[in-house]
Image (cartoon, rainbow, N blue to C red; front, side, top):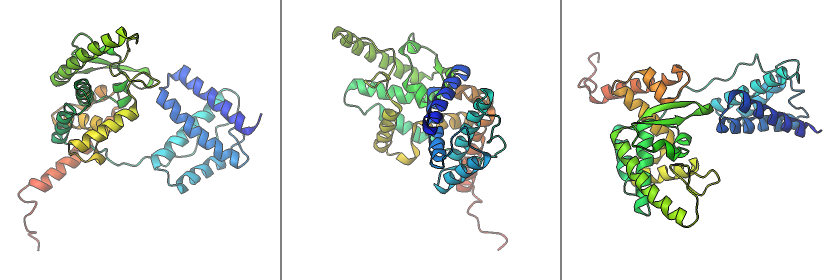
Length: 317
């Protein structure tokens, strides 16, 4: 078996173990596969593979990534993937050591997440109700945006929502997050209204489809994609188009900045970090603490912009 085939089989076995033992999410597995395939390509180019790689090879690969201009977060993620693969090999008796275990990662940049003001979010929500080729499209678009902002869901969680979760005018939605972990998120009144209107349109469309021999979809936002629901890419294109029409800077608007806006606006209005952590589905409150820094920066900007002494002459001059 060649080094390339050996590594490919190893990566496949590792991913299967991750899925079985840790219930790793599909997107997580895809990220591991991409990262480890890239590492394998580098090693094979240098006549090495995962079985023969040393600590020096791992460090050389990270230097190679740095030279390619990869972000710190990308390099840190790839080192993490290598550490986990080598640990898997050690536990399976495929290696006697973990050559990456003592290597310290480059760390992650401390850049604060971009977010949107309440006015900007309102512009997006209002515009979503008016764009679409048909009235049904408009109802769907309004529902997508209202749910996204009301719950802070990740885009994958939103587009893959089962229609069964939305039945019965729910006050709460059951969301399946990373690793299959479930959490309950409350719905605002506008989100419930938008959901109810969309469900009525969904049922009408479903009745017509079934009359034409097309089976019902299990998803709240069905599409003709291979997964059967609106794709993340499709939603990304939609939200960029929406931001342009709403006259909100498209560079600031992504599905994830809506999630950041949800958290930041909750914090601004008095919610505690622990509650926000639960709503976002963060495993560690340390991840949620970034929003306190976002709020601090906005408060500083507010003071500098509006405090009467911010433009006063320097008394020491």
